[in-house]
Amino acid sequence: MQSLLQPFSVCSQCFSRAIHQIKTSFSFRNFSSAHLGLATTPNPVAAFAELPHRGFVLLSGYDAPKFLQGLTTNNVEPSRETPWYSGFLSAQGRVLWDVIIYPYRSSNECGKVYLVEVERDEVGSFIKHLKRHKLRSQVTIRDASEEWHVFSAWSSNGISPVAEMQQGSGATEGAIVTVDPRLPSLGHRIVLNSELNHPAAALPEFYGTLPKTSTESYTIRRYLQGVPEGQHEIIKESALPMESNMDYLNGIDFRKGCYVGQELTIRTQHTGVIRKRILPIQLYDADAPSMLSYMPSGPEVESGADIKAEGGKRPVGKLLTSIGNIGLALCRLENMTDLRVSAEGGSFKPGMEFNVALKAGNGRVKIKAFVPEWLRIREKEKMDRRAKREEPILE
Image (cartoon, rainbow, N blue to C red; front, side, top):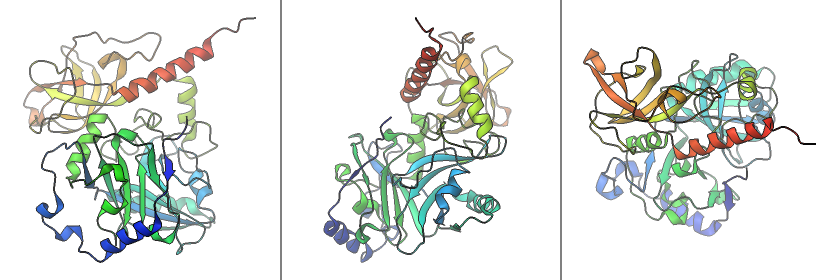
């Protein structure tokens, strides 16, 4: 599949002037909401949000590509300059961390340089994990969370194919802009050096002037599109990469060589069936919703609670997280949706209802899982490939 991340050129003089204006102005953190044009709606169609819950680890050195290649689920090409989504697994094939890796050109570092975006609270344990595997590799590992900040920006205008800013000169050093490598409809990922406190100068022109919104708005947008992120949603040492949709979100290369946790992942891909996946859900009281939509008021439910069919005893899913009336859940596809992933099929029938326990044992609330269009497309592609492999050869 051809990458959606294509470079576009930026006038270095224009960019340099914009960067100079930012450096000589006040930090946006010192402005009021009025100065910022703060978006007040919880799910704005166009905005940008800072993501303080995400941190960075910087890897540099001549062995950095080889080092990452042996630890991550995606292929690490030393010549690659576009960011990518990936995961670190345990030896048993369970997800430890989901990450976005940004190749970065720096005059201050030796060899290849990578910024690895990971959950901020996990930076310390992530670095310890890397250092355990370092051995004699020529690679430097350090916490860069204070030096770099990440933003997400999105627009109702959609994603332009001209969506990647690459660092071509010193004028652009300190800013990385890319389409979110997991799903283009999430918008852009903007990584800025701490000296550049406002992403406006780094944004592609078609975004125009965007208001700043809350991290919660970014989270709502992710949930509506069914994209999990971090240890609260991709449960550390428990979640499986394909059940977490990492394969469908461009996070796994099944053709690459050995890496930690590869055996179970490859075996499942070639011989198994993925019966459970993380899906967006909506909580409701009366009539089942036909479309997924966010409302800020919603019942309080316990993360990790079992989802059961009305009148059923066996769990068919597990609620992972929620905000308002929406969230994410690990669902048995053939029991909670119309997707068919196996020859025998499942128990789902149109009109079935499911429920999950409220907090403090105060009864149960209805819950419905939705299959995002991107996931439905990827599932169909997978089934088509499997059917093609099983076709008899006609002589």
